[in-house]
Amino acid sequence: MGIFKTTIFQSVKQAFTKTKDQITDKLSEVFSKKTIEPGDLEQIENILLQSDFGIEFTEKLLEILKKKIRNGEEITLQNLKEITQQIFISEYNSLIKDSQLTHSSPHFIILLGINGSGKTTTIAKLANYYSNLNKSVVIGSCDTFRAAANEQLNIWAKRTNVQIIEDFSKDPAAVAYETCNVALNNSIDVVLLDTAGRLHTNKNLLDELKKILNAVKKVAKEKSIEIFLVVDGNSGQNAKNQLNEFSKVVNVTGLIITKLDGTAKGGSVLQLCLANKVPIKFLGIGEQVNDFVEFDPKDYIKSIFE
Image 1 (tube, one colour):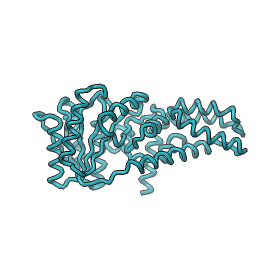
Image 2 (cartoon, one colour):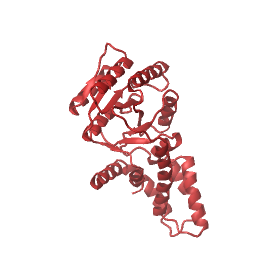
Image 3 (cartoon, rainbow, N blue to C red):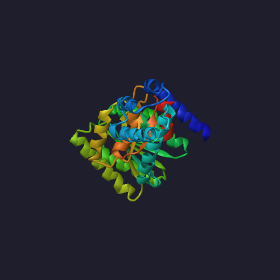
Image 4 (cartoon, helix red, strand yellow):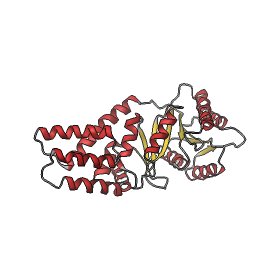
């Protein structure tokens, strides 16, 4: 397990090398002096805000720094990293506690995301992830609008040796219903349901999403249903808008952040989940099927600052 965790840290750290250099280079200039004074806090604040840590999170961090300065304590870059980690871990653990879900079998997962977010590839990565945990998986191809998406999903299903249910003659909710029944009748552990890449402003597609969810609920009954929103880690403010709009229609239970290739601002991921009270489940850190890790808040902070 220790080796696996190290691999996760190294993967996320590598993905954020560019961002990390930008943040730490700027902060190192501030911390190059022996003593940090109150006047330096504004510069630290600007650096954190430019890195998308958000106003609320940054203010909490600065209040702690001010208190330490008033108490005559020496502030170092290491202190800043540790305080950032403490604040995020504390808030994130509270968030996770409030959103804990007991997984049933089958465990139903519906994936949402706009076109271009990496949703289809993410489904393949999830299928591979659960297969590696010796879980049986079935994919429901509920995007009946885009043939290319189904073709891509078919290719990934074959590569990951996972069953896929598709039927262009049926509407998406009917495919979801059939997939869930196949899982229930064959004692399959995990159901992954793809949905049409939809703009969060398209009412018709959002209404269709409600129908898919209702179809899943008819089969799942009391079993666990999760709804994951896949967002591009580089989309910034637009990711927040997507989450806000989707949340008006369904209860998004988790986030999967994709395309963390070094251009994303490190703090944006922290801000996205804390501001909206939605936990991050996984990170996509590359294009290959194994470039996919569970989100670990400690590793994430370390990847930004180390």
